[in-house]
Image (cartoon, rainbow over all chains, first blue to last red; front, side):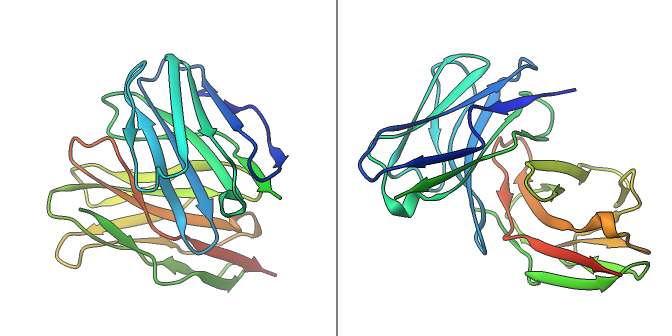
Length: 113
Length: 113
């Protein structure tokens, strides 16, 4: 089975802190994605990566950055956390040519105080 | 650009009753369509997908969806729901060859005894 793991299920940080969310997949997928999920807004794409060291902005990249140094790991970075970044963050991965079926991690619920 | 509309944010239904969750999309290119399900406190799982061929696609747990190009719809149906179907359901679309999924805002299905 494809497995996508996220470093924390719950995280509480203070305004202004630098926050790292880690995602690891074990199926050698080329594509990896970071979404945030908010009630009534569904999933919104923050960033995605289609190869090591490659990244593209999604629909809401402001306030976030990403890093992909290894194929299996995709990190989301909040340079200076703000209260409006309190949300559920979901990581996903997919094979390059598998018609976009994405496999999701369990999510990290981040609260910024 | 693509978009997905799920008009119903919540759908309450009694156990063993039929249910339909509506999804409409817009796209300027040919599309691939997906339904994902999110059980409480979990990540998203693929429920079913339409890539090509038969316009009626089925999942292993009794859900089905029909791709209707003229109405730009991909509604999800189940003839008899179970308590365990209580979850949030997301419709998603991507243009052929693209890496990015566009999600709807989700429909919360609540099955009651």
